[in-house]
Image (cartoon, rainbow, N blue to C red; front, side, top):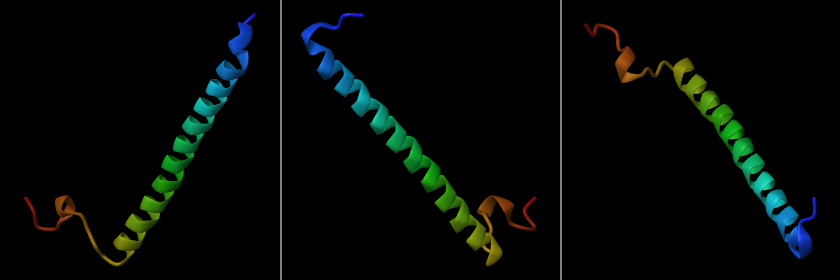
Length: 57
C-alpha cells in the first residue's frame, strides 16, 4: 500500500486516535471501579436507594 508523501501524518493520526480511545476506555474502567467502591461503602453504612425503601407498596 502506497500512502504517498502523507504516510507519516496518516500513521500519526491513527496512533493518536488509538491512544485517545484507549485512554477513554481506561478512564471509564477506573471510574466504574471507583463508583462501585463508593456504592459498596454506602451500602455497608446502611444507606439505601429511594427505590428500595422498606414499606413502599
